[in-house]
Length: 481
Image: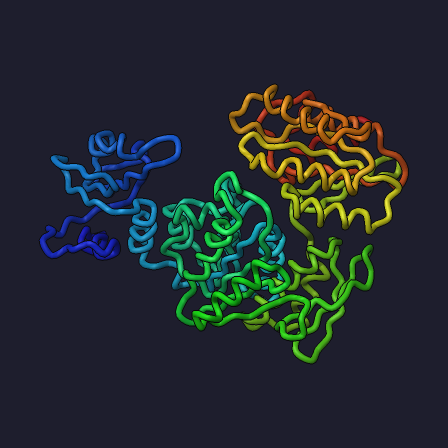
């Protein structure tokens, strides 16, 4: 790529620049090769500006950063936002790859993963090839890859969009990904808003700030791009007003006759069947995974697929045969007749929706195993425990990811919460696999045991049993029984 083109992408004057050509872009100094452009990003733990000399030593041909630096042996260009600069540079380097695909970005507190997987299943049922980028994993050109973060960094994202030969790209777009400009130069044909509820306030500080970050995704729509929004959520209604004022192309799903897709009623909880209305047509939908919240996910996927042009009959059949998502309402049978359910629910609203669904299935008892994350939002922990108490007969508190926090300290905080909310229905067990074993031993006929918080994720520490996920722990206990 010519340096002049890169500076144009950064909206910097390139008139006096020699036409230097660089071979790649990096923001990790250890990955720099001769002829690369290095972008120095000030991070939360380390500052890329501290590694500029290392990058130059490795052969960096030019450097972009935020600090006022002089006297470097290679050209240096100062920008106000290095993360956004990285996104714009990568987008230019790979020749605006989002323009080659039907781009679908899905954001919200809950439901992003299920909606994205369901939408991919629908589109592929209609013969549309799909790249999927998200929390559980990535799939590009039919090849599956593990995921380490919901929304990849801007450089990796543009590389993948460039590599993709799929017609559509479905992305889960996290608030962190938006705030850190990982999607800053990506343009979307469809932006989907599932919902917004209490989460990530250790990062965003207030719900208003959290909402405005999510809303930034809709500023990345292509000229003819469309917004697909849940009108049944108060934050969705606010977003609709905001975008309508800006004369954006908005389509909605909700519980109103004014919505493009209206959620009408639940017919049966288990097996799960519900009715939606689109225009003058009513559709009875069968869905293999239960829960009203999954009907809302289906409505989001239905409306998006319809806007893309998929026939209603194809969508209906796809929803009825949807195989589900790893770690989302995965059911395992217990030899005593109980059912264990592994789910990623990890927010107050996620708990409320998930446990309400279990209660609707008329269990004898609900036993709930969960923990708190070392790097999670501590302000939501008490509310999560309150919600669990409202729906559960027995609560087993344990550890989730430590993320660098001392396990004993986190366990101490957990025990204090258990004491504060009191009652003999709360048990605290440090070892997560032992906590699940305790539930396994307690479970009886017609009990439902919810193991929440991690879903598909692997443990970030070693426990008593030779398992690395909740799913493997349950399988281990089952094999041992």
